[in-house]
Each structure stands twice: as structure tokens, then as C-alpha cells.
Length: 364
Length: 101
Image (tube, rainbow over all chains, first blue to last red; front, side, top):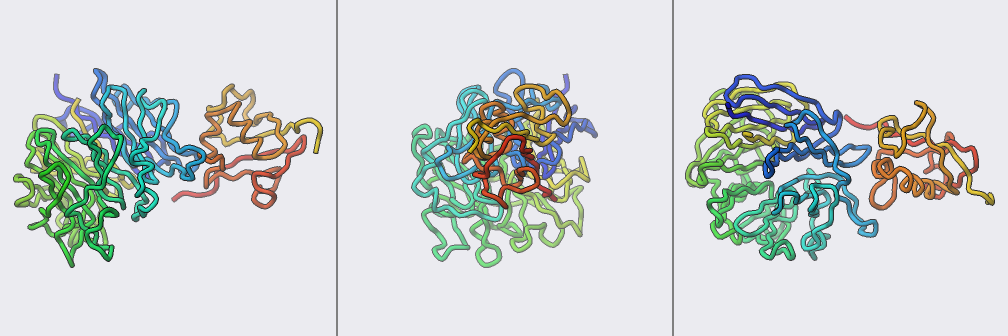
């Protein structure tokens, strides 16, 4: 049976699901689901025999729900509740920015705005806050970035739980999410008087490969052009310290970063002009390093050669885990692009979707 | 204050009617609830129709930012907010704001 690829695309105006034979030229389009509702995150959960597509629409009017599909995006059913702060907390949930599998088959972790972490142990029906980070002494000192004060990255890696907060920085727990500490050595913040504060960095995304437990990659808020060393970083000690790997990129600014599923040294970014958050010179490219960021290669085959001024947001880039994986990215101008063979050649899968916030792809 | 709890009609957004605990018999029938003021009315909505309530109010019990609550023709913010008193026969209308883009 040929491999099937599923791509969940969260937009400003609902969820679209693409599915089909992974080698086919065209994929079936399903949706929009939750029309009119923005989605900042989706998840394709394959821990159980039946893969689930999980979407988190946040209605501007009626709040947030967690929606689960057990038929690869044909029908969705809401869980019994969504994350929420306690009535006396003082904070109210504005958005959900990240959803990740927890340790058990029914456990989920959910990062929200304002920055906080919630856990569900029953498939998303009930939620409890993770106090180690939600009530951290720093939590009321974090400031919102342009997208809001969001906990956008949840990464279980190397025996630790890594979190990315904008603008809070990188926090890690090494005791099962009981306590969290800022681990930001080497992560810069060009927008603060102290460029290397203890916390408060505008981390954009963190990625890692399970075969290299001590290594993590980060797309941080860049410093281009004044200090183009701040944006793209690597840690070789489990996140305790970070160093630049931005040399060779046209800009160290960008939002997403992903790692190849079969090649731990291969990492992808989409550099953007810092001032406009758009493709440098109007000429979009995905950049790939095959040696953990020491050298970078520009991938442009099939992409517009000029006059393309889009943005790829922090969850707008993904790579599926097929035998020959495709890179997928969505743009704020509503295009979904597929780069076959790890980005060797790109094709436009959809050209007129609403602005794309997030893309998740998997072979099932 | 009335000795008995005032009974009022509550119109909820069309998009939320399917979340009522019991199907509404008619398209525009609305809900029949009893409360002395709007705050109590929302509490009663939470008790009887929790899936409607969580979509209308945030964790603090306040209507979400783009939800408007009217008592008869008046927005509650032009009266006493959630403390706006209710009298029997009042019509409480809950509507999503004109917003988006």
C-alpha cells in the first residue's frame, strides 16, 4: 500500500487538510473546518494505532476548543474542555500556540497565551496547569512580542522538557516538569539594554532530533543587520548554552526551524528581512544545512524568482517523515509549498488559502 | 426587589444553540431563565447550559471581549454592567460583536 501523506494547515480563517498518496501530484483537500476561526497550532498524533489530527481553533467570539479527528481530517469532535486559568488567577486564555504529545498515549501538553503550560492526561477532556512554569517567578515579568505573550514550543528531548516563550526565552525542566529554569546562555536579545539577559529573549522556535539528545537548534529573534549572530543557534549541551550557526545565511532573522527526520545534522530555516519579516529581496528560499549549521545551502528550485514578499511564521514550516521526506511551508499570502526530496524541488500545492499560521505534515 | 426570582427570556447566538443542554423547541424560542441580575443570569446559564456558558464567558466569569449582552434594548455597559437588575418579562439578548477581518 503506498504511503499516505497528511498535511494539516491552520490558517487565519480555519483548518484545511490535504491528504493522499505521498508521491501523487495532487492531494485531496478537505475543509475548511472551523470556518472563520484562526488556528495557531495543529498536531498529527500517531502514538495510537489510529492516527489523530488535532486542531485548536480559537474563535474571536466564543473562545478555544480542542478538536480531534480520528479519520485523518474528515470529521472533528471537540474534547470536553480546553485549557483555562483558574477564576482567581487573574489571567484569561487568549490563544493556544502549541500542542504536543506527553509521555503517555493519552497525555498532551498545551502552550497558551498568556504564556503558560497545561497538561491533560485523558486525551484532552480535562486540563490542569503545569505550575512549575505557569506560576514561575518570572512569569509575570515576561513581555509580549508582536504575536502576543505565547508559549509556542514544547519539546520533550534528551530527558528534559524544553519550552520556548516569546518573549520569555528558553526554559527547561529536568525533573519531570516539576520545576523549570531559564537556560539562555548565549541567546541574545537585541531589543534589551543587556543583550544577554537571564530571561526575556524572543525565542521563535526550537527543534531537535531524538538521535542527538544533547543537541538542539533554535531560531531566535535575529539581530540582523547590526548583529547577525543572534538569530540561528545551536546547543551541544542539552540546551544549557547556545552558539551562533547563522554564518552564511542572508539574514539571521526568521521564525521556523525544523530538523530532517532521518538526518540529525540536517536543519532548515527560512530567513526573512528583519525589518519587514518578508523574503530577502523578494526572492524566497529555504536554507538547508547538512552539517548542523556549519554551512548553509540555498534551496530555490520551483520557488518564485522575484517579487514574492511573504512571511513564513514560526509553525509554518514542517517536514514529513516519509522515506524521502518533503519540506512543507505555508505563507502569510496563503500559499502552501511542497519541497520534495528534502527541498530539492518545490511546487505550489495551494495558492489561495487564507493567511497560513501553521503546517503539520506526516506520512501515515 | 421582587420577592420571587424574575423570569426572563434569553436569546443566545445562533451558532451556540447546538450547545444547549436540551434542544431548543423553536428557532427563536430562546431560553427561559430566572435571575435577579445579569451576573446571576450568567451563573444560571453556566449551571443549566455549561457548554454555552464557556463559549460566552472567560475564566473570570466576564463576557468574552467580542460578546455583547443587552437587556431589552440597552447594552449592559450603559446600565450597571453585570449588576444590571432584571425584572420579569425582560428580554436578554447575547450577540457576537461586529468584528473580524
